Length: 205
Image 1 (cartoon, one colour):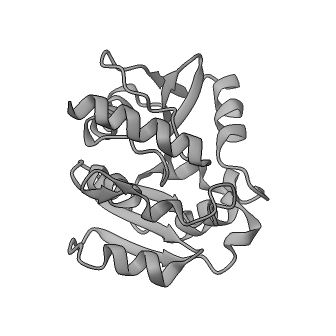
Image 2: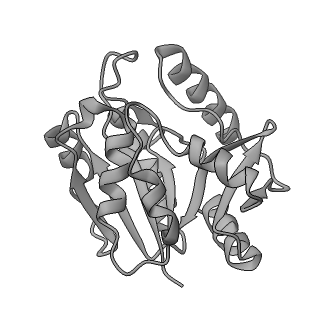
């Protein structure tokens, strides 16, 4: 079974005031960190959806030479997260399933991705999600048989509504790893950035 990762990283970072994808985290950037996690995993391909500040962000990752990485430019990123998600899905090829990963979640690791992939294959359900704080979090895997459910999404929304519908149908495998990571932390404000820097510094000390 082939599984493709879709990284959503097209947003304008309005609350942060500068492209969050380029923020330094240790010896890399936020987006480079997310990309490394995906490319170090068992994903068969990785679709990276960019939009705002495309040229600058492209230059920051231009040295990544991996045939599994596919760049897609969302010219309508101003229409919200749903436009990037649908564009990523439109660029799937022969994959059997796809994993949605947000480009601003620095604590998603290859270990988390591979655990979700393994559980998805074992469970045989069409959806598998990271589960913490009594709610579904990214990353989340969808079988490609579900792709038509995404066509009606509009605005700055992802797949949460679809996950909730699938949960009601008993079609979601929930994964809570034995190892705990602050997966839920994303980066929308300067305060978020400082908190993430603090956690990374603590992990590295």
